[in-house]
Image: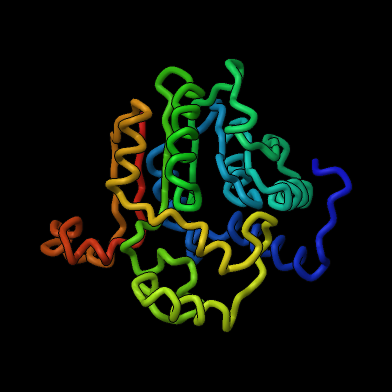
Length: 261
């Protein structure tokens, strides 16, 4: 628990509702593709699961609810850990534990081992050199036959800027920088975190992640990509779907899903 931590009541109400929606909704949130793929690919029963960059805990508690597993959630931001603990108490799901943790400053120890490590919409928020250090640690924290599942919107995607809901312009990351900043500042909103607590700060924190950059991080951590699923607007067009990784069709990929072993 985050002892003594308090949040503005209006912000608390909004953030808890958002976190609970991420937990409950199987169809309409930005996580519905993740959930469907995870259900199809993995059996988490009797496994130790790490939700790295767990945010306010919606997905962590979703794992804990749907499988007989032990879930650990780490996030660097104490406000998200506060919200995750609050949501867990509300939902009464016992098999999850949340901790504020910077594993660069406090590395994982030899007793912290996991069968599955999930990074849902986290990797694009971490400076690439730090991301490399993180994956070097996560690799060491895997049990035998352990797996790391990574999801993120690639930088070329229409919503990769994380601010299209404000600008109303897909691919707005390619606008002149000064123009884009002005568009964000017109409706710059508070977020639940302390570290990136506005949309503008969150935009500036993005690392422009691409599959090529992510593959390099994995390779240097001695991990191999055993599965890749690129969700694209072309997925329902079989002829064009075969071309989705080629330019300019790769600009239509909205999310990447990678399994690392």
